[in-house]
Image 1 (spheres, one colour):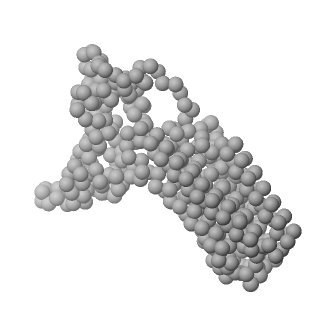
Image 2 (cartoon, rainbow, N blue to C red):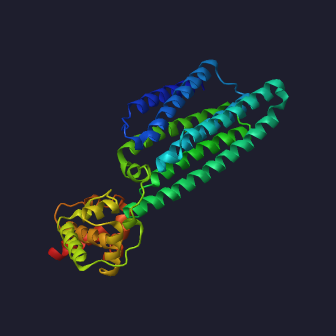
Image 3 (cartoon, rainbow, N blue to C red):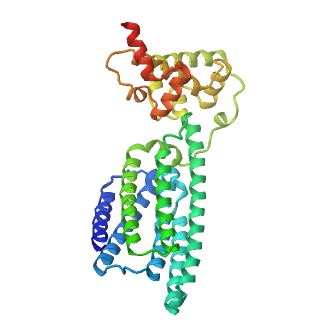
Length: 366
């Protein structure tokens, strides 16, 4: 049992220094991520030291009320930090110093009250654990609501900015939160079911795997999530009257200019670029988002999203007809980050999967 605690401590301390080595930009938009990275570092150091102490002192093989109580109270802090990290991944501006401070103070007060009540009357351990279990359950429910709200708002904001379905690109953050929630529920079951040292060892292994996974998520966020930070964490700017007001018409000179810009944009295959917001594309075309939306609706009788998907599918068909192009990589070559989204669009417009299309092209040439 002691070996498990010591091993977990070694892993945690290694992961803590991996977190320190993650180079997060000094840009103001990354401030919340840097803050959570530092808090996770401190958390990993504390849990690692705690595991070393437990490993050296040993764990009572019999069910222990102190162990149940400590598990609940420590899990409150973990749920707070892990949820804060996942919500920050989605919506960096939502988890500020005030939110962190209020949650930390409330959890600390619950800890102080619980330990004071326990040491005042050790026979009250059962009802104290019950009260804390109820409070911890309420905390998990609140954090689920908070994460869900952040997810919906972040996805809506990203889809409005990129004019693409973002559910697949946010899936890994959802999995990160669900994994944290699973660890939290395991801690709750441990305390509620009054489990002993064997189950504690199993929980330590499960939690350690999650600690490693969360560090991997932090590294992945730094590498892959620039598209989130660029939009969601950007400082809000006041829209101009031209952008905020609906466009009723365009004069012929503007239409011809935009038509020529769109043709050039297509000829240069700019539609295969990913992580460009619609505002950035409109600026590249020499117009505004509102003007571009009006033109696509009234002159091309489609939406920019549908039109760009059709161009990307057409380009994918061209690429799949060439020798040596892998169906596993073609989605990235046409600017669609998620493979499942690409397959869905390709089947909708072509009527077959990319692999089936590639085979049919080879047979046709044969």
